Amino acid sequence: MYDEPRFLPAGDRALIMELGDAIEEKCNNAIRSVVEAVEAQNIEGIEEAVPTYRSILFYYDPLVMDFYGITSTLKKLYDQLDVTSGTTGPTLVIPVLYGGEAGPDLGFVASHAHLSEDEVVTLHSSRDYLIYMIGFTPGFTYLGGMDDKIATPRLERPREHIPAGSVGIASKQTGIYPIDSPGGWQLIGLTPLKLYDPNREPPILPSVGEHIRFKPITKEEFDAIKVKVDEGAYQPTIIKVGEPA
Amino acid sequence: MKILRSGIALIQDRGRLGYQAFGMGTAGACDQYAYRMGNLLVGNEHGEASLECILMGPTIEFEEDTVVAITGGNFSATLNGVEMGNWCSYRVNSGDTLEFGGVISGRMGYIAVAGGIDVPLVMGSRSTYVRAKIGGLDGRNLKNGDRLSIGGGNLLTAGRQLDDRYIPTYETDTTVRVVLGPQDDAFTEKGIDTFLNSPYQVTNSCDRMGYRLQGDAIEHIKGADIISDGIPLGAVQVVGDNQPIIMLADRQTTGGYTKIATLVTADIPKVTQSPLDSIIRFKSICVSEAYMSYRQYEEQFKNLRWPEEQA
Image (tube, rainbow over all chains, first blue to last red; front, side, top):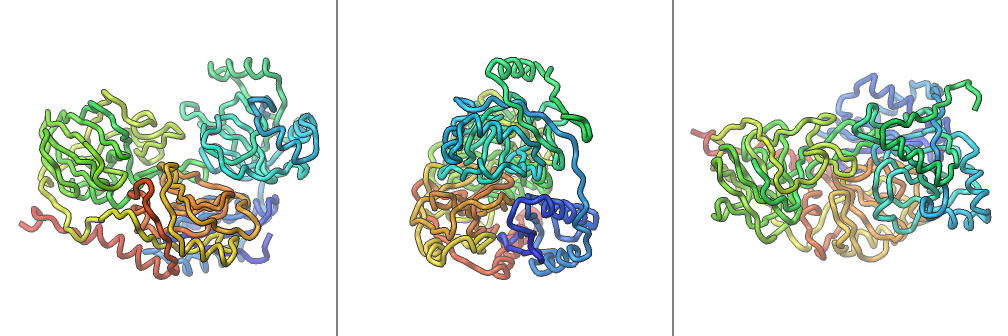
């Protein structure tokens, strides 16, 4: 995390406030604190804030306030802020069929890490991940805390079609594609759960500040869960804070 | 109105603002200039929804009297077989048929109707976002046989014509202004120089999400990956193959590739309307010059005067 925030221009209607250049819980808490403070103060000219791991994209109206006006206001707000606050929520269990057609890049991730495919699956599914941000597409969770041993660069050329439910790795990040979309992550598995369903309340299953745990399942288990999900009868497993795993 | 043949058309407005923090993209008209001018030509002043057509316009039979204006790309529109001009408003009667033919210029055409197209608001917008299956008509492109209702508009706005100085010409070799950043520091000096001094060609990987261009490789210092952050409208993203992608209305809210520069709002329509194989060049300006271009852009919408208002 930087000592001072950086402000980066992003055209004539947006700017980025960057608090750090790494995925760390402290920085992510600070991001959440800034967004809450900006919302509470209702700063004139700011139209929308898009928080990420370590930066916030602000859309603003330059006819109301320019880059220098916005950045000096945000700087002042940041200096007065307690950036250490931040709570975490329950753990959502995501069943995943790893490898094969469901995870076409598992082999590449394994060879990149000099591990077997099973070892990658064990490392990936043996810890809880904090949901640092939701972005990219509706309900796409960006999770922090993956084991460095299985970090893998993105594809050089993004795929044009990735099916909903795909679980992927990009550098030190892991996440789940909630809708069919293009993308550049290494795909290691597939969940039968729907993270985003516009006809369900709530339409987006996970929330920022909660945790996610991946649970390896067989093809038979996958098919059985999928049937229930399609019927709208599947109840996801949620482990409350303080409950045993 | 009844959609006899759908072409490639979908319902759009200014976009779904305020939900990007949940990963919900804005969608909205790709060419906001043509969309907004179309609305003003038919007397709509509250961000009413229009139809956006991509290279293939629909055939529409009107089931009510209204006023219609075609803006943006010119796809040879006719009303009951008689040629229609772009950038002016026409009185339409129940039973009339609007049809389109070959593409004369541009890529995205807009059909504005007095009162706007009446579909439910989803999170404050009527824009279709196909990837999330929301907005417009069931979150999808129009199909043959669809019926759309039109909000009650003012029929006296027929006969409006946009002054020539407000009508854009769509070039096949165009220069767009950019502000460098947010990640221009991820590129070598040579990379920035290549980006600003080389022509880039529009490829066939272009849609409402983004336009992928091809040209001289833009050199990174350490590679194309960054820790994911927000993607502003008009960002020029350079991915691992060192080629630029201009991010448009259906872009992801966040992404993990370097963004070398961001287009000024006023020049985004030039990209939107650039056909396959045309050339795009980038010119760097500073933030204060970009504000001036934005102010001029917004003033265009305020300076319009119509004949019926001068009576």
